Image (cartoon, rainbow, N blue to C red; front, side, top):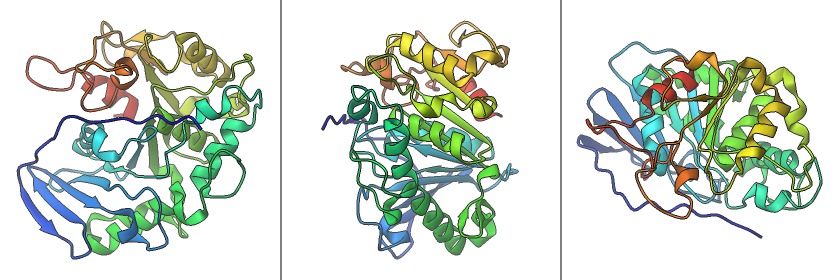
Length: 321
């Protein structure tokens, strides 16, 4: 089974006060942002797979939007590879989580040659809720995205009640209308499918689209009622997602109904209110998947002369700020 692994060669140091929570997790206060690093099994001992840490951020001084951003890593990656986008969300006043989940199977790699229009959605939905639908993944309810998110929110509410993480729960389930879900690569596809099947506030796809090699459209892309809340960005030289596949998928979903594709390198915020963005800027780090990673993976995102991520305005727009 085809797998794709992302490796980070950059260690990021955070200056602040590190405080153990007593369960193997810890918190750091750095400037206005609090960072909580939480092992998934610290929130629920029945979570037994893919135990790399969740990364959680909140601005402890400024006004909050009372909206949660959940970011899902790409195949084989983990939340620590995407701290930039999650920290930016927190800096804008969102409660923000980089969520670890079961992401060891490359979904397009497994499904693209099957000619089965339900393959992608069945695999992604099993990853999301843990209900057995797919031969290509094996995720039970305890290890699902939904259980991991619910148990993390319960954990955070218990540890930091004044921060009101519990507002993102409703009857023991995610309170989807108050949640923006985003992700990179496989995580972007999972975010989109969540956006199709659940009433989220917004879904953001970084460097991904589902496709079938025979040209058929995966079934979840034919649900245009969700198009108004789905946004995307990709580099046209993406090594894993052919640009013509992306254009076709965007059209199938209905994203092109909201205007032309906009290049964020030359356009200005708010990018003509387009739902489809691209960048052609050279990545900050070279690898065989450099363009695929360049939109949001910390190591690869270009920076300006001041050392800031060059896509901050684009990220803000995608987040709905």
